[in-house]
Image: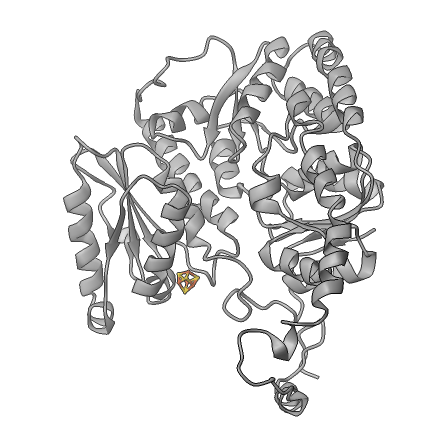
Length: 467
Ligand code: SF4
């Protein structure tokens, strides 16, 4: 029952030393591409931009990814910055755009291409330049916060100068709760229903879908840090004087605690908070017991919602001994961490792939939920695995709608063990280790080469000392 601190051990000394996730800039790019009237420009190596634009269109972006190419000469002579400035001027058309976002990838960030020297505004169009290098921003989740936080900061300064645009649907007549974190589309609706008896309403979800929503986000009574890694956004909202509440309304205990915390932060009378709890908690209990989960599950991911999902699994009856998250430890997941640790769960922040796989060895689960390589490792061992991003975080989690929503997919995966055993029995060790891939002659293993290469790599202790 321990909580790991951010990895400073010898096993992960940075994304470029040991790449373990997609390019983090994807998080910022996605936030920009999902906003109306927003032009997003990448500045970086062509291969990085190819991968990022491919991935963004794979995930359904319907916007153009702009790109300012460079070579060694334009990089070292400063011409690249001039090219970026020219691109920004071309895109700063107030008829089309509210904001132009420029994202420095690894090479321009490392070379110090000074996006801070871009004009802050051209023809009324806001210009925002951010550095999102893989060696500086550990996960794509945190890269979402880099851009969303920069936008909130810009909008906060605008609001301090004078009147700003009202929300498209007009201002709410109730105090609002801003929601931090991308969620399944039904979740904000469920949260709105939970807030209604408290006399509160949903504010915008940050990252927002258009610029004017940022003002609405800043204009809240309370901010709910549903995803706990939005630290730059939290800083901006705190500077605007807004109280922050961590965790989320997941499961029975989580919803009860969240309603109390939000209600207290918004000065809602205790009687109303109790009424809300009495209205929703029995339905949540019923939904959880209707789809019980029986089995041992290890869980890991890089979305930032791993602790919330683990709470739901445990309340559904699952045995969850380990939760790994690539995201850092922040105050906004403390309630979830304490709840999980009280149930005997090992919570591992800044978890590496090796640690997530070691947890499978240690706990021998019936199902491993994780990132693609964790799931691949599990399936190679004939162990059912579920990909967190596509199969778990793309489901409702909040309130009565979230309770029990995981049961069906988890139970179907648990029931697959027999099929895995059958496949394993049929294929044996074919296609593994030295016999992987397509070959014409029977491949020969060369353990002596591996041994020789391993000997020439220095081994570090957990404190980073070379042994
Ligand atoms: S920008 Fe950096 S982290 Fe992203 S793909 Fe390029 S080299 Fe990798």
